[in-house]
Length: 342
Ligand code: AMP
Ligand code: TRP
Image (tube, rainbow, N blue to C red; front, side):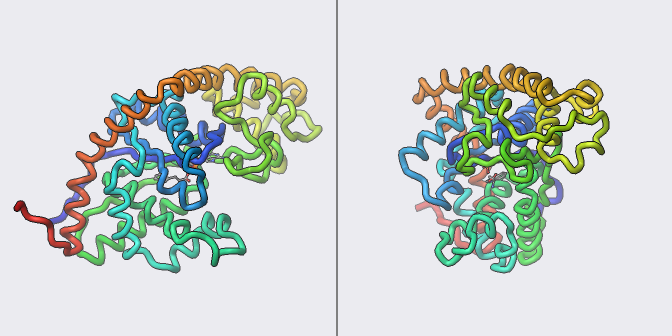
């Protein structure tokens, strides 16, 4: 049996590996909230199985997972509207991932830039899980037949691979079972850069804490990091072209635009001609105004760990209503004998 049309459904995930930052917020969380407001089913996931592809201290992983859940809710995800889950509580993700390990080719995985970056020169010593990471990601998405996946720019290649896996599965088994997912990479901040180096992505793993604004930073810390952000000595241009060879200036303008829900053109129409000594305090005020309520709410939610754990448990129950039948069907297509009632 094959399916020909797929109900629109949104899925995305974030790794609970600590240091949730402004890039995660603007490139992902804030966008997830926008999708929740549309008339579509939305599923958001803490991908703890992905996190352990590199070493995680077990106690820290639990804390980061709950903190991420608090971050989702504080940023505006409503666990009644969206399905909020922890990946390991919905076993169908890992089960479908195994099938995809057998569909995906070694060569496809070897081409992934995230694999090359993370494994570095010491690939022989990287975990097998790190290599197979994109097959699990494809399973996260396709076990819901999700059609739309909002992510930051850095995940584009993984989403193309997800599509390749869906196409190869459908082709090999002669079905139209998995949808060809749309990556949704939109907005002014799909790639927020480091505050210390405008050519490097803002990242959880950057050893310099000054390179990123963490979601748990207080107002003073946010303002201080923006004041100290690397810039150049020129004033802001009034046209977008004037930002081309100025990565740090472009980054700060992009951040401003994304936080204020403005276009880069609108920001430059207002701030063009100003020096950074003037623009940075504007940006710091805006960042504090937008981020502080989230930080405060996250801290409040973290005090009630039981409630977070219940939200995740309820999310998993709702999620499995979708994933269990899809996995069962995938097993059947592949030729697994299903257990009968005894
Ligand atoms: P990760 O922290 O790697 O699990 O990423 C979670 C989400 O945040 C993904 O959608 C990423 O694309 C997005 N993201 C991570 N870093 C950045 C960044 N510097 N700028 C924009 N989006 C980002
Ligand atoms: N790989 C993503 C990241 O590091 C996280 C992720 C895992 C994800 N599974 C996903 C994102 C499914 C979107 C959809 O950012």
